[in-house]
Length: 227
Image (cartoon, rainbow, N blue to C red; front, top):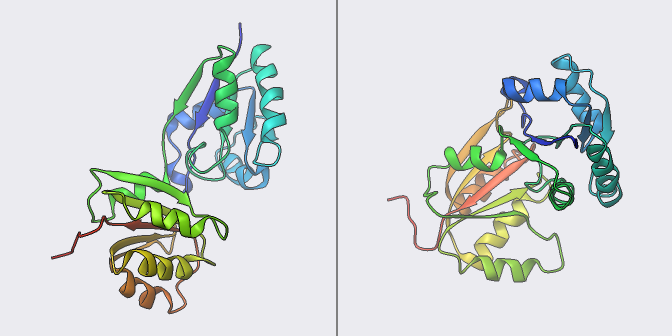
């Protein structure tokens, strides 16, 4: 009988956020496919998980997916994890899941932490309709993406690095105007903070040496106000 592929969510900062089911799964599988083995070993060491770990990331994903599916077909059960959060959400994993499903292998989600849902839950802006953009193109195609997203009647969720967050805020102002934004920085970590206001206010706030850590930018739909 083939093994099972588990898509396991891991903490986005606070190690205590690993679910009991995720911990049990990571201990019980034959192999863990991790985006960055060095990062993941900190989590695994914390929970005394000694399961073998193999590297699975953007650059080796195609070749590794085939090797991992062969292991699954031979009876091994495998857990795939990202550096943080839920695999396949702006992280490697979907090629492995797709190939496993094509081969008739069972794929089970072990849900848990996600920067996307965490940010939406504390944003303070409407979340009944939202569009997840993830990371914007750094150069080619960036203007086109902004022009497309501008027309959406929903909250737009953007992941951003500390090096580009101010640039992205300026681009939002340029292409969309002074929209209402909610910004989460370092979710679940020691210096976690959230901001709610206009994009101009956000640019002023985060230009004061607050651009460390990972950001989630949520942009309210056109016409939404805080009044």
